[in-house]
Image (cartoon, rainbow, N blue to C red; front, side, top):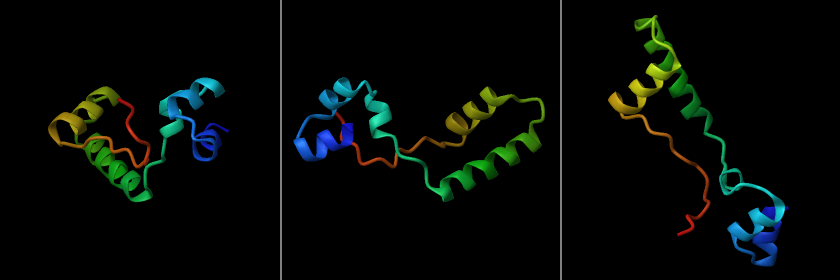
Length: 81
């Protein structure tokens, strides 16, 4: 409904989200591509095989900070100033 208000009625994303009680993050969400999911899964399997005592937090930080993996949004949602 919020998407309809933005596309057909010309409402701003912020206004439509407030009107329908949806966060802007939820409005702009786009699922990751299958290839990206497979790449992340392969990295995690290799990492957990090498570091059996690491939990999710350490694996996440390792991929983000040391391997340079950053979350990429695939959504065409515009940034609101």
